[in-house]
Image (cartoon, rainbow, N blue to C red; front, side, top):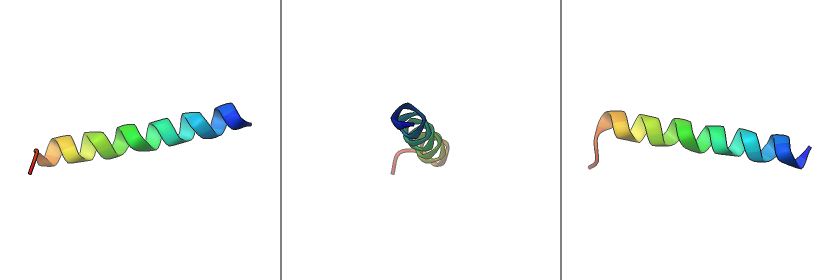
Length: 26
């Protein structure tokens, strides 16, 4: 279960990084 949580958190971080990257570094 811990592995699944870590996977979900990593995915969330990746999505946030992608979104901020698309907006461009401010």
